[in-house]
Length: 157
Image (cartoon, rainbow, N blue to C red):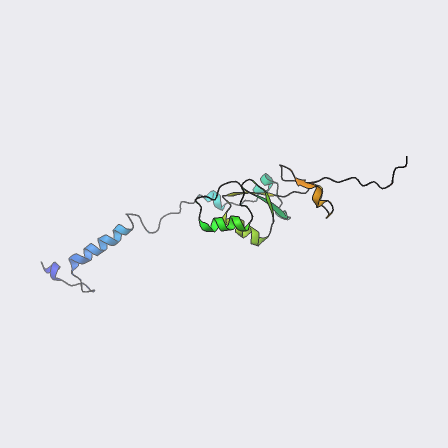
């Protein structure tokens, strides 16, 4: 009975203090505040060996990306829809070429689960202005230039 009449430092009865402390434990649902991280250590491993897997070179990265949207933006947050629109990926499975610069890569980071990103390889070098109309991208992500033959001498008959 004396315990019930005692006042705590905050002016509350001791019985009400017990109720408050019991409520604060209930907020954590029995878990400790400091738990061990459930992130697998493989995510923090060095990824330098993946360059051989994707055919990349870390010292000389590719200059252009081929970005293709492979998943729908329906039922996705508005910021992902805005990024898809800014990058010109409204239609699905249509490749779009972007530069490999930090501004574009930052935008691609937000929608990386919706798109497929491949490097644009140029086995025959970059085309000139005249050859741009005769170039195409094959299914392997290579830029192929169909060079037209220009006759140097007129054939006399």
